[in-house]
Length: 175
Image (cartoon, helix red, strand yellow):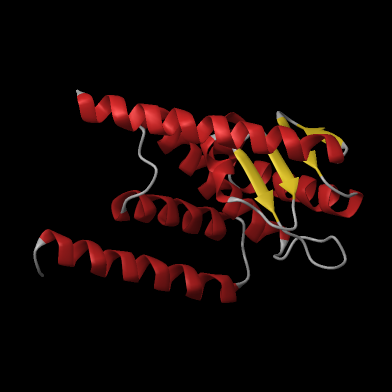
């Protein structure tokens, strides 16, 4: 009971800090609303995010519903903090030309993983564990297949999944 209280208290503190950071970043940029998600950033950045969400809606409807339900904002930021996952905000750095660092289909799959992360944190209080990471990576991989991402993106994803499986087996006691 005490552990659960401490866990919930620390999660609430992290949420409070994340909200304060989001409030301080938000006024400096103009928002564009796409579905239920607000996009803060330049026009090129917002156009690419919109294209990503449209691809996701067509290619992976379940993933699109996850993103629409659990993410509330995507912010173009030079130094993205990790605290956004507690409140459903994705801070994304961009290239020098204010573009996404990946193809729009790959970014759409990444948004599915971030939505699942927010769902696990807010719904179950599970910020991170190897098993949760494995679930998120597999769901992102499924979205990548459905969105026909470039084959070069799959190699890194499959290596991360294999590493987590190996770590999980070692913790479980062999095999």
